Length: 116
Length: 115
Image (cartoon, chains in turn purple, blue):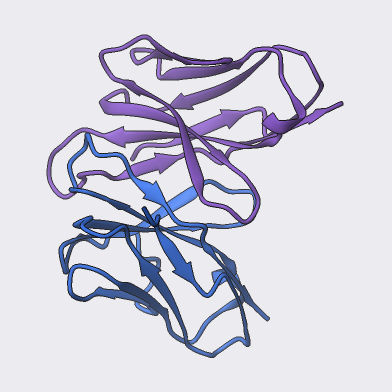
C-alpha cells in the first residue's frame, strides 16, 4: 500500500526566505507526482506535475524535483511572499492497471505561513 | 467555464442522522472522484466513477457510506447513521477521462461536522 509522508507538518518563515518542502513515498512504481496548494474553504489548485520519467518541473518561483528510485520529492519556493501562505499537498498517482486509474494518494500536507 | 461545485458548503448534523453531499462535475467530464480530508490529514480516496459505474469503491470506510452517480453528471455521497469520526471535509474531483494522465479538478469541498 502506497504511503506518502510530508515534512515538516508546519513551517513559518519571514517574507523573502527560500524554503523547501519535502515529500516521501514508499512505492516507487508511480505514474506521476503532483504538488497542490490548498487555501481554506477552497478546492485544491495544482501547482506542478512531474511525470515519473522527469527529474524536475519549474513554474515561476516554484521548482519541484523527483527522485523516484529513492521515493522523494521536494518543492522549492524562492523568495517567499505572504500570499504563499497555504497548505501544500503532495500526491502520487499509481501506474495504470486494475481499477487504480487516476487514483491519487496524498500526504498529510505542510502548513506554510509566510509573515511580512 | 464553471468548475466543480459541491453543496452544501457546510453541514452540521447530529450523530445518527443521515446526510447527503452533492457534487456537480465539470460538464463533459466522465470521471468523478470522492475524497475525505480529516483535520490535519491528507486526502483519503473514497470512490471513483467512470460514467455511472464505480469501478473502485475500495476507499469507502464502512457500509454506512454509499455513492451514486446519474446521467454521467451529478453524484451524491450518502452517509447513514453519522458518527463523530465522520466529521471531515469531503472533496469531489472530476476529470475528462479516468486515465492516469488525466488532471483532476477539485471542488471547494463540503465541511461536515457531526455533533
